[in-house]
Amino acid sequence: MGNSQSLFYPDNPNRRDRAQQLANDCQNFVDQYNTKHQTLEDDLGVYKDKVMQVLAAFGCDTLDDFDKVVQENATGQALQDWNDVKGEYDRAQVYVFAARRNFVV
Image (tube, rainbow, N blue to C red):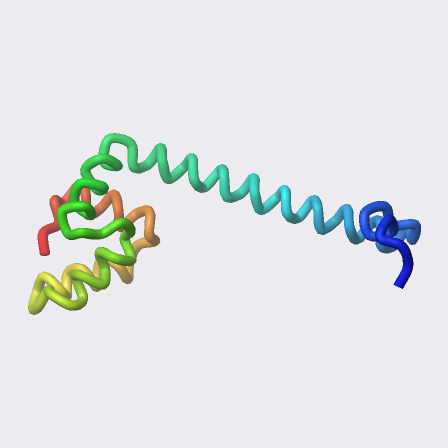
């Protein structure tokens, strides 16, 4: 199989280039995550605490937990409104929308 040093210091130029590409891809993903995370934090702004209070009031830690509670307990128009909101927006936008509308189940 070769020595373990070749894994970290590839002597084959093609392997070295591929290892560098993978390292760059990983760094790119980290940068994209950090950018999106910061954008979400900025978008939530003053609503973040309110959203967290709403989640806590329903015994939830995440929006997915809250969605499960809504799906199990809401009926009629409230459930339809929630599903409509969920279907039209990405996760970050749902947080902001729910906070702005004082969405109640």
